[in-house]
Structures are given as C-alpha cells and as structure tokens.
Length: 383
Image (cartoon, rainbow, N blue to C red; front, top):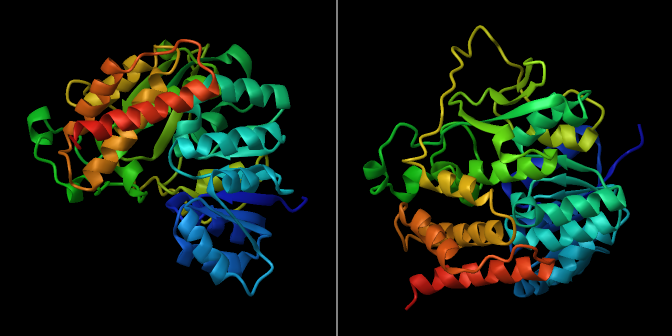
C-alpha cells in the first residue's frame, strides 16, 4: 500500500496528539502540522516529524515559532491564511481537521476545493455549514471520513449498505458525568466536576459539551449532513458503558453495531487507513468482563442544551451556526469560571432568540452569524 501523506490541523490538541500516535504505528508521512499557540509542543512535533510546513494561528506565537525553528528548513505560516495553506497547499493526501471551532471551516473548504480527502474531527464544519460542505465535497469528489467515534461507528455500519438501505441511525451517548441528576442539581456544578468525564479523556471544551450533552446535539446535526438523514431518522440513546459507539437500523429491521473499548485512536486509524483495517493500539474487548450494556432515552428536561440543539437542527439557515458559536462562547466563560454551568444553556437560548436567522446563507453569512453570536454572549457578561 502506498504511504499516505498527512496534513494535521490541530496537532497539539487531544485528537491531534493521538493522530500522531496512529501515524507512528502506521508509518504515515506528516507534511504539515498546526496549532493555535502551543509553540513548545509544536516545536517538539516539528523536530520529530520534519514537515515542510507548520502553521500557527496566533500571530505572536507564530513569531516565536519562527525563532524556535530558525535552524531547520521548516517553514512557518501564520493566521487564517497559514491554516488554509497547511490544509490545501501541500501534497498531503489526507487532511485531518482536529482544530476546535469555526476556525476549522475555511481550511476544510480549501482542502475540499483542492480535492483532498478529509478526516473530519471538527464538528463545527458540518454543524455550521453542512449543506455547503457536502455539496462542495460531492462536486470536487473529495471524500469525507469521520474521525468522531460515533460517526466512525455509523460509517462502518453502513459499509456495504449504501443509499436508502438504512432506516434509522442510533446515536449513542455516554450521558456524561451528570446522568441521573436533576435540573436543580445542575445549578451547583463546579468546573472540576464538569471536566470529569467517566469514560473519555478529551479537551476541556468538548468535555464540557459532553457534560451538557450539547456535544450529542452537535453530533446529531453532523449525522444529518454526513448520512443524508432526516431528523426523525436519528435517535439518541444514552449508553453509559461507551462500548457500543453507535448502531444503524436497516429497512429490514436488522441492526448493526460497532463495538470497542473507548479509545479515539481506533476511529482515527480507520479514517487514516481506510478502506484497509490494520492492527491498532486499542485493547481488544473482553466480553466476559465488560458487564451489562444498557440503553436509555436522554432526559431532555434536565439536559436542555441537547433539547435546544435538536430543535435547532430542524431550522434551515444560520441558526445552527448561531447556536454553535454561542455555545463556544458560553463554554469559554464557564471554563474561566465567569458563569455557572446552567448559564451555558441560558446564553445559547438567548442568542438564538435575539439573532435573526438567514434561511439560505452564504459562507460569509454563516461566518458573520458566528461572530455576531460570540459578540452577543460576550456582551451579556461584560456590560
């Protein structure tokens, strides 16, 4: 098999670091790396993998990186343009989009325009601009392979069953650290409690999203775009053991599931070596030790962020972009301990109520809605 060449956007984050573990195991060639401002770790990665290009989004950090790498032939690019160059300006076969936020949308679009295969770990790309992204990917014949564990599971279940063969996607959720709690109990959640996920080790933002279950709402919207599913074809099931990563029910009522221990390196590797399967770093399942596997419906009265996302998924236009941006801004405030855990929902609901939805938006409209929502949430707490 020909050695695959990888451009990795967001190499210093949780998914990015695990992607490099997978690359080491499979002998993949790293052509570009990027970070926001984690120059120390990026320098170590650059010296190990010797890519032709590193991109640093923050301009001050980029200047620091140029100093750090001045004794190497590695070129340093900066800002949004640097991220786009890392995505589309190398000879990489696969672009792994592991950056967080809508900052990942322009480089993903640029990579698709360049005909690259996209290993998608950036939820916001499809949440905010799914129709645009999927339409462009079809026109450019650019493959989009999901890296998220649930979407990878769905993708694997659908192999060999294209078109209208599936009846329903069964999207699993761990339930996060607050499964079973009441809405009143969520009023007093601390930051440390919200960052203590029972099954997964992830970045802070996605960990908080998993605690509010907003993350599952974002995945619901992603699934609509990735698999051409209507909202009523997707059902969310809380599965606390995180062994079944999702399932698909087919038109004949057969259900196929993908199971493994919780380990992001498995879906990352499947995207990077697809269609081939190779030995992985993931431990095998021992069915005699995992115990019962249980499933339940999510409590939408308690986890209001999830209910908000499911309602917004039904609205065409910029509403999903507003919701996503408001959530990002609110989670940032919570991580800075400026607002309560329960206020995340209140911020997002207020933004959706106040910001006008554009039903047939351009990419510029989507990015403008994103900025407006962030500014709106910031204004709620900086008056």
